[in-house]
Length: 234
Image (cartoon, rainbow, N blue to C red; front, side, top):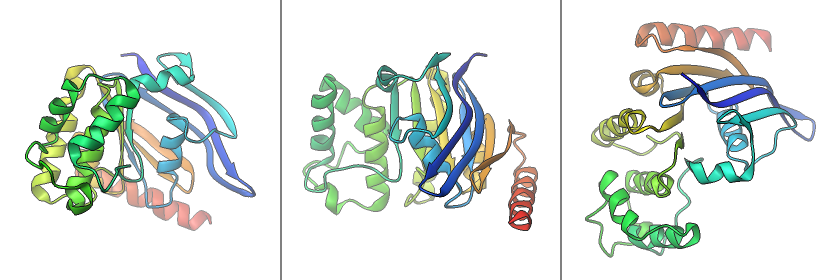
């Protein structure tokens, strides 16, 4: 299986603080990569670098075996650090604005609203949505351009158990449709249930990368060992 995304020795500094240290990770195509780590570990920074929101201080990024370039963003759908929605617009209107900016057919709006189960919101403004509904709208916006790569940062925030189960099923379906997913979370059970491969980042270092054993107990033990090891090294 080919690599869809590769990060090679990626480091990121903000002034005198190093937040990522020589991150090297590989994401295979048509698979789900689960990026685990405590809050503040560097997950969101890593995702922002992949999407071009931040530039790395050093290192290389490859998309489809090519050096990262602006055009690759046409193939990426993302939700990082919460959905970027207009609170005074409806779900449809939010997607309509984005569709206009991206020159996407308006027919796609109905399709993604159905995917995330927001077809019945009608004239309800996004500011009156529950947190879970806002998360689903953010995911709809990430799917609007029918991307090859989907990047979701803590997507289960605010979702109830039913919503989490629906999202889990949705994520599992993406590789079957030819899509590659990077899912970041601090929730081990959610990542364990959907991921083909797992990376664990702690204190800006990718401390582990490997195939998902599908054993929640093994993953929890590994995660806690990495975290405790990092704390001892401080």
